[in-house]
Image 1 (spheres, rainbow, N blue to C red):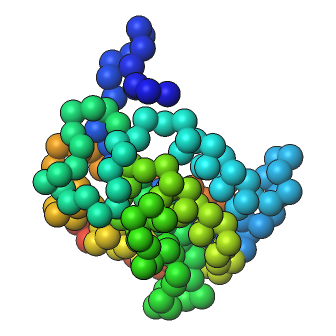
Image 2 (image 1 turned 135 degrees about the vertical axis):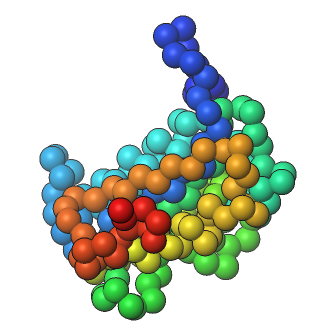
Length: 178
């Protein structure tokens, strides 16, 4: 895929997308014909990352230098699973060099995104589904003004197999729970 347009479609906007991945124990169950839901999800995401139009920007690119006006994507992946709501979780790789993974930031490079997905596959958490800490990570690691320019649309996908463990309302942003 080199472009996001066709005869029946308009061009796609520039998108910064955060995928929140359910790393709970129930994701180890079989999903359809796949014997393990979490590993099946990683396989699908790896295939998808190699097919979508990405910017080529690495995870260190600041908002002012981010690619805009191309309809290409930058992505990040955060696993939401913790022993309890206050526990510090290993929800994305940290300490990555350029080309290895994203440090929880947005990237338009296949090598960095594949590094993230491989890390998630090797570090499947198997705890409870606390979404709020993962939303905070995305807000403070990816969607900040210095990392994601206003010209790029921000999208969050939550990929989960069931309900959340968060206390009612905790998974909502402070301004979005009216």
